[in-house]
Length: 405
Ligand code: CA
Image (tube, rainbow, N blue to C red):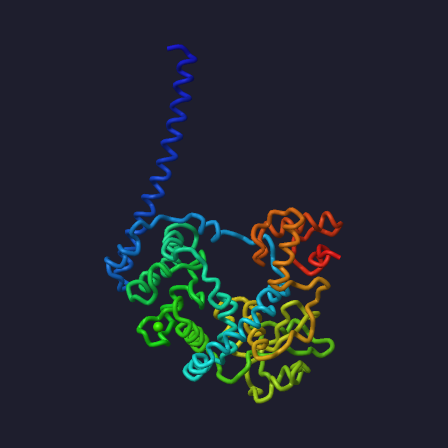
């Protein structure tokens, strides 16, 4: 054989072995998934999940690797708290929430009698979690959770969620086809994780199923039960917006730095609306929050703020729920503005901004009020064109700059 022939043969063999390695890689991943499922099947038995339930739930299950990218996704864009609140507590959500308070008034009154959590708080959680049932997420829970149970960096946590999901199927609480949600497995009106569902979901409409997807009464009562179990105190406010005394030492603020309420009053931290603090135990443990530093609005928060915080561990989240609940009760915006000259936009204004960007030829997809990478890219391009510094942020300044004059 000539030298050239050997080289051609060698090259062909390299190509062949590469394609074998590729299919071997896929086969190995399939094998790893199958072995992982077999292990989960053994764990399931210990959790009271029958082999029949397991096999029915995992038949034809294939991993969805896109959830692993979301697991490792680090947002490159940090949302300022005024943007976060402007989108979650806007006129649309207040109007929708008030309509829901009226529509479900009897159910909410019964929920309050049973669990001690007021209607406005329950409806505020509903509005922020799933936009009153409009946004459940559309990823099949078993696919996402099986993938996260077998690959990636939090397999132990997700195995518990996967098995809790199979338990939902076995108990017949939610039909299999309706078990869809976020990439991480939060589902239904309440966006509970399956383990949270198992811990606190209740059957409130009395049909024998705890169905937080198909039953609004079950979902509202389950939210109230969550808050009650998290230490909710009936009749006590979450807290209030406060005014700080001149020269307030910001280092004593922070959710974990609790003092008796009367100490804060003595230090001159006064409620904006004095009526809010009336009747609250002066010994109640309270903290001062300064979400945007001492130059922005200040808040005194009590036990119920912590109960909301445990629903989704972020202070901005808890503040959105608390503020939306106040707005649903007829309260207004914060007395102290956020420390910015470029405030955040409501969802309606975000849609308007997206329509203006689309009209200028930017491909931002459907104007849905959700500010994603393409919208931010278009904003950056327009900022550069207008001689502004390119931030990619959907704020009032760029909206007003693009509005026709
Ligand atoms: Ca039910």
